[in-house]
Structure formats: C-alpha cells, structure tokens
Image (cartoon, rainbow, N blue to C red; front, top):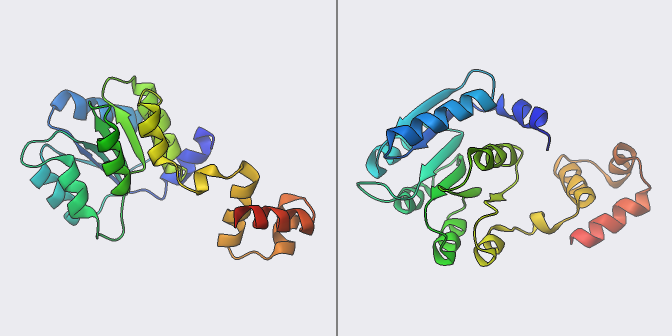
Length: 196
C-alpha cells in the first residue's frame, strides 16, 4: 500500500504507545512517527513492563511499539498479559535478538511486525506503513527461518486474491466484485476457488 493510503488509514488511529527503557530510543521513535504520519494523535510512553501493561489497559492505544528487553518484566510478558484484551492494538516489536524461537513466540502472541534494533529507521518506517495498511512485516535482516514464521495464509495470496477477499469481507456478491475489479464473474469464481 502506498504511503498516502497508509496515512489515510492513520486517521482512524488516535493513540500510540511506545515502550522502551532507553530515552533516546523513545524519542527517536516518537520523532519518526510524528514526521512519518501527519495528523493529530496522542503518543504515550512507558519505560518498563508494569508501566506498559497499565498504559495498555488505560489508554487502549491503536498502535503499540514495544521493546522486548524491559525492566520489571519483558515485552514478551507484556504481550502475554495483552493476549485477551479487545480491541487489540497493531503491534510492532523491537528486539536485539535474531533468534528463531523468540520470533516464533512473538508470532504466536500475534505481533504484526518484528524489527531488529540494529536496523535503519527506514525499516521501522516501512514496518509502520505495512502494519497500518493491515499487513505483517518482518525485518529483512532476520534469519529466513524466523521470517517465515510471520507469514499468514493471507500473505500467501496474490494481490488480486487479496482484493477478492477484501470485497467478500465487505459483503459484495460475485457479480459486484467482478464489476468493481473489472473482470468476469468466472474470474472471480476462480479466485474464490484458489483462496479456499
């Protein structure tokens, strides 16, 4: 999704929670989000696991940017405590560990993106764009074994199949989808068959 569309999606966002125990990281993430995503939204910050859990319950942010290595208790524990909360924020996790087991644990906890702390800020910017557009994003620097763990069945579909899924979710009939996508009813039926 182009950044312009991702920015439009942001207007549905009202708040962000940044959780990191290093002030310089919190400030850099805050600055990047504000420069990347114009508009009015609240950014809250937390410095440890207990403060993060409290802020999540109180503020119910739309986007959570979370470091894994935190004092008090880890980012993994924050995510475990969040697992039953509704609505659930979009989640971008930062870690210094390129560990397939950690990546598997994070994906099981439903994160949308995993970024290595050694990566460039442009990787974070790309993650924000992808996550706000409803996709998952794995830092390209992570091991390929770990990266494959974040793929969902939706990620395996072609662009056109994803379009069809979105139209179905929007309540459109086969004929309506064909008209919107400017293709035949049979083409839509083929896409539906491939999806199933």
